[in-house]
Length: 148
Image (cartoon, rainbow, N blue to C red; front, side, top):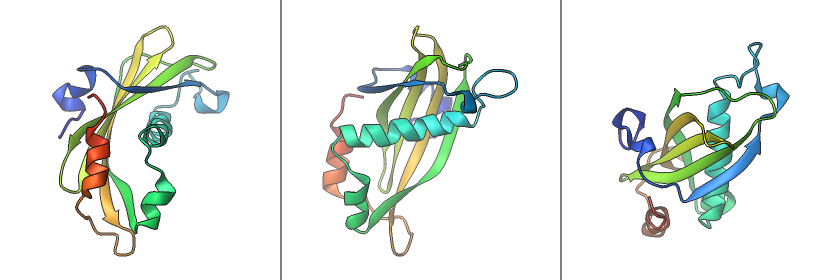
């Protein structure tokens, strides 16, 4: 799995971007902790904020006839988040292939405790045919630019 959880990649190296969030009551389960699937929502929040940070706007990508879909998502849980906890979603670019790239995420409680590691593989597709396409050079350069 390129740059994924199984490789230990998420725990290595710095994350060039973070966005602070707070756990909302609706995100918790009967045990009082964040429901497991919400970590994928947190990854989406981090992913879109990171893309904006990189200067990549989703509407501009789709205007070029391109889009991306999530081809794979993995989560490894370490410690619970609870209602009203502040936490950071840290994001970095992982492996970049011909038509896909990985984003690695660390979900860290504000006290520094690592709560989860997430990885998603984005597959670039032609918006009309919904078939994978090669990552254009300008997009590849932007994804490669941040420190990983």
